[in-house]
Length: 139
Image (cartoon, rainbow, N blue to C red; front, side, top):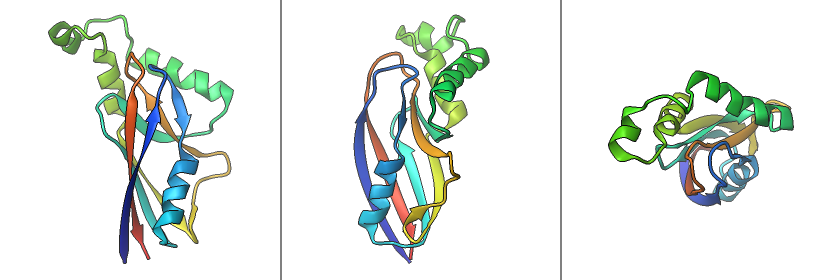
């Protein structure tokens, strides 16, 4: 059993920017030399999220629209009242989606579905530099 970790950086455009990070995660797995196991992908920060999605234009529009229905921007958030940074909804959205994802891999290949990619979703109202931590465990 081995464990390998690495970090890669991404730059986002701000709220609702969705990035396909599958290739970056696959590279970390390849660099690890571990053939079979689990990979955990985690974003540092409370206004970013990681999940899976079919990375296609329709869903890239549908996901932010759904988040707006679930957690609207235009209502009062105590976080905004306290800090005046306009991103109370960003924190709530990110916490609902979550900061991490664990995916199995075999023979060095992520066991994702045919149309499934690992994505990062920026929830903050401004562009950000993000660190994505990747932990590979297996043999």
